[in-house]
Image 1 (cartoon, rainbow, N blue to C red):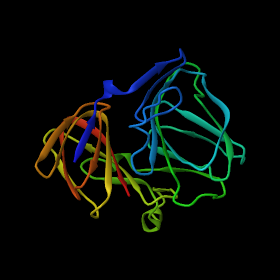
Image 2: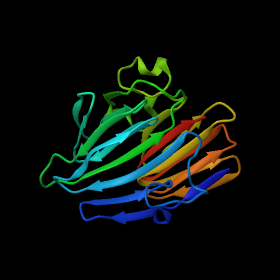
Image 3: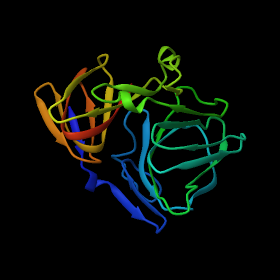
Length: 240
């Protein structure tokens, strides 16, 4: 029901300017048993040194979400978009029928820490598009705050980025012994990723503890009890 992936089990690589850890098969790392989880295809935990990044490169048929954890990240693309994002902001790009983009650390000396996540789109052949959104950082305490969703009703708030998939991405912060319950429809999946601290997860009779950068994939349970152990920050993704 709950499958745990410890942080040190991830494939890791260092290229001098880039330090990265892959939660799914990507680039030189290939595991036929770890290709995707539902429509979730990639989660890369990247740390980029100042003045470096990924130059212009192509993508297609993928929904790409970037969450900056610290520092700043600059995006440019072949559609003419340009934006700099830091903690509290989301970058969402629908590669659709094809787009080129770059992702650079605009600081000369400050590193940037980020998560980049890829999801298969619900419908192929979309026109490529890009947006940034801002979520209320001060509202994360003890609440599941949606930051990316395919639900049009949630997108109306202006703080939730659109994604072309039947999914919603939440962030929350929990203090020691603070709990909250996550509920979803039967037959769906949940992906959990601990950004900071330690989080307890209970589904039915199964109870696990996740540490910093640990993740879990949950199936067969429509209700999770989440509990903080010390100050913690958690990413929760509701997937079909």
